[in-house]
Length: 281
Image (cartoon, rainbow, N blue to C red; front, side, top):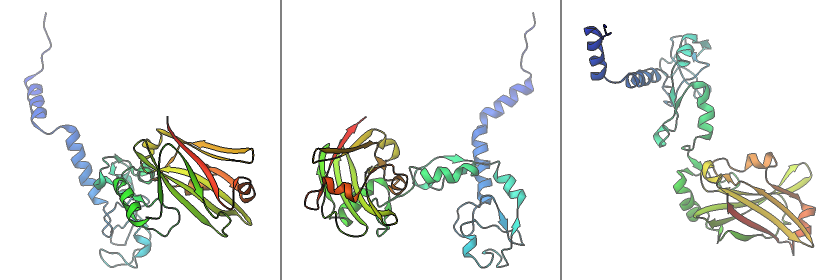
């Protein structure tokens, strides 16, 4: 009985494949070469569809384009010429996350790039303190040193069960109260905001955020509770990561909410105590 044997040519080809770089390495190298074509000459980010070119064919990204008076490469008019060929090429390659220098190794189609980068864990963290006065940004492990150095007025309490005391809650206008809670080897920021979400109607918004990643926050549950005058108001949820921030939670009513009249039911001499309990899932 005869047996099928690979031909000499097939054997040679297999040896050549073993000796050359792997196919995946070759594809990755080609992908890098192609993505370099899409680098914006101004910010060095990628020019992604819809792609517009100047009359000479030069490209610039959609972020830089509105800021420019002329083409940064040839100084000619920018125009509004759509480059469909480059858009087609862009749809066939994988682009690295803009935070790859910070440690993100993800590459993905341009259509998924923006959404990924908005939630990428390697995106720089902003200062978690409410309000827009502090513009600090940095790595996660630099957040607590920043808070301790720049925001020294924030009190930190140790333990899983504490009382967050907000003083002078009758102060007019928008007011923020902030406190830190340390337990389970992590730091949590407690925020109480008073703001006018609806015209003429002031409300309080209380929420807890973890000085950590979204994945880490899923390991915890926090409980906020107001007690007094034979009444109880409670809220329980997963803490927000400081990567997400609290503005979207407040706008979506995803936190403990009560108005000024209800606050008076639990306040004493203009001070409001909120029991805060952190537990692990």
